[in-house]
Amino acid sequence: MRHSTPLIVVLSLAFLAWGCGGSSKGNPDGSPLQDSGSGDAAADTDADGDGDTDSDTDTDTDADGDSNWVLIEVSPSTTFNMGSPTWELGRGTDETQHSVTLTIDFEIMTHEVTQAEFQALMTYNPSYYDTECGADCPVEQVSWHEALEYANRLSTQKGLARCFDCTGTQPDFTCALKAEYAKPQDCPGYRLPTEAEWEYAARAKNSTAFYPSPGNDGNITNVDSDPNLDQIGWYVFNSSGRTHPKMRKEANAWGLYDMSGNVWEWVWDWYRDYPGSVTDPAGAGADTIQVIRGGSWYSDAVDCRSAERSFVDPTSRGDVYGFRLVRSN
Image (tube, rainbow, N blue to C red; front, side):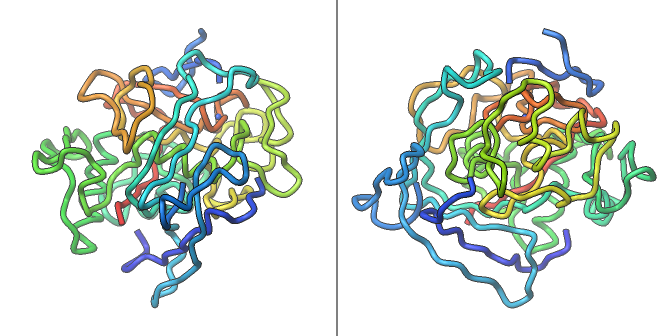
């Protein structure tokens, strides 16, 4: 990573927001199968009708001017609707809309981990598009376990506790949450986002299929090629068959890039059906398949929606799999 103490852009959750379906899941080789804010909780209201209960926060930066991170303030509690409404074009049967409450503030990377960032900590670059795309492109061909080992090394570099016990030699790590933490949000070091944290950050207080941006209302009108997605993400109809450098498309209202398309992003959760209303969910206990989110350069528009869930084996290393990190704050 290229930061010491991250720049903290504290989000105004009452900010006027500008606003990757179906159940097409990924094969291990990277191809798809066919098939509310901070403040007094008593004052929180769903004033903007987006399903969130939220209140105001402020904007700030830190001394070293690193803008790779955004702080999302949700404490003491923020509630949002996770999943997709029944009428959303291309929705999957595993996207049941349900109420999720988050209580732990978290920092999230503005972009997917790049090849340069991964190389700097891990001393190798597994990416298929290392030459064709390059250092500022998302690292890919990384497993879920490699992402956790990268998070550990970043934590060590920044003087923070490691969140995971990892064994093996690179690139064949096997990682699990350290026993002292009941859930990953309890760890002060770097980690993958939970599925709920990822979707909350991607939506940036919006309930549309994609996150809105100037000239893009966030709605999906075509499951294959969609003009709204063209503005915010690299997918099969505009990617020319490869990844692209970070931050070249429009960001969401909170300054996060490529939450739709470019590479699928590993999240912490093992894949299961959603439960009912939950608080600070971290997914099921260890299982066999891991959730990935956001779609990729190889995906149709339907698979780049904010509610889309796909899953693969955690040891998979397709050229469509990457990640970004978070840290509890």
